[in-house]
Length: 205
Image 1 (cartoon, rainbow, N blue to C red):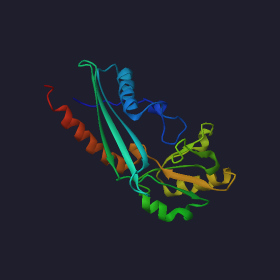
Image 2 (spheres, rainbow, N blue to C red):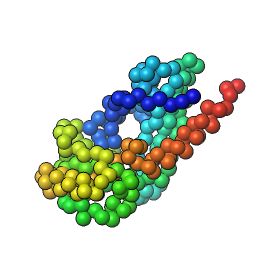
Image 3 (tube, rainbow, N blue to C red):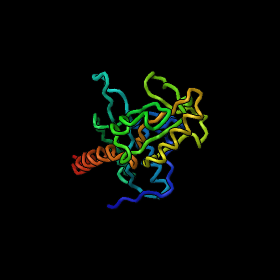
Image 4 (cartoon, one colour):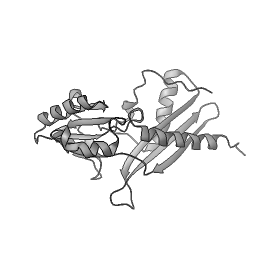
């Protein structure tokens, strides 16, 4: 087998980490839907997709966990297999700033610039329904949601811009958890892919 990635597949339609599009359904359903989304675009009978969630760990007051799922869908065999992996190996975090100098320690902690960032005006976010997850408001103009920032000069410019647009004079900066901007998450997905591969190698009795 070889992997083919549809070049223009917009998986943001199924939900975004920054919150403009809320995920519709539980992750185990969404990851299968995402695989089928790619299969429909390419007219293929096999599909693979991943989906991630980040949330406080139930037993650790300040720990954040990464829950990754990976699906393999085989329409010829009529099966959809989902494997999952939970890990504390994540840089998921956020900070407030008026200037990039305010968050120097935060940048070191999250591994910038090898790991990308997202920035929005602070007054454009809200607390999610569970009281913990922060989501970008749905009516945020596109130009006020800056994603995939991995350059120091660009980050300094974006933080100043977002702070100036916010009523409280602050920018909200958070880790970009999309896998192609997050090597830590990519490493976790690599482990999960091996786990899925081992399961697929077990013959059905």
